[in-house]
Length: 297
Image 1 (cartoon, rainbow, N blue to C red):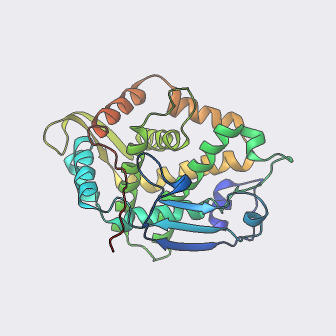
Image 2 (image 1 turned 135 degrees about the vertical axis):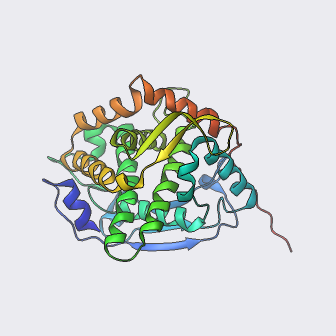
């Protein structure tokens, strides 16, 4: 996996000897401390992300397997998806938690791979090159792009069938829609790394023809006019091109390239920004889950 990402990154990055503990699959029984937020929940982590423990390959990657698996979440999931996607895209859509857990594991593993941790270009870390907020966005974009890439990589290794890879890609695009719906900046104007990476990925897929917006077609719910379609035959090439772009930017410490990617697919006025508003309106019809736990004796 490290060699695959090193090949995408190109020079000057060179494959490293990588080791980390992967994965622990956890059923959450209590959210507390920093893991407890007003809405939603942490679905995976790879810690630590920097420092001597990470550099020595002693980090640990975990995935939480029981979040968003309840019937209310399933109903909300289909309500959102059917409001945004065309009927033709629905065969690729699955609520199967294994799809999201696989992506979570690949995403968290990728934080340990490629230009990661304290990798330096000309003596500078990514924080020093890109600045903290942009560095965070690029690292999360690297990890989530790698999750898309590794689904294809597993197909070539005979470890994942084509249908499952396609369904995983669809689930990742749905995940991205969820983050897009939360806005790409905070009320204070600070960038949201996950939302911005989601905007870059979906925007890229639209430009590559792997996804399309059909303004005159009715969505799968039979109500909303205009919907997104998926063209899975174009996903592998689009993912490969995105991977080379993102890993290359990280590997070269190319701040200008990162700023251009953000400018083109996050900040630019035009059709994609207008479509993000459509996603936001439709996704936010359904409330975001908050998790409450009780212990019965």
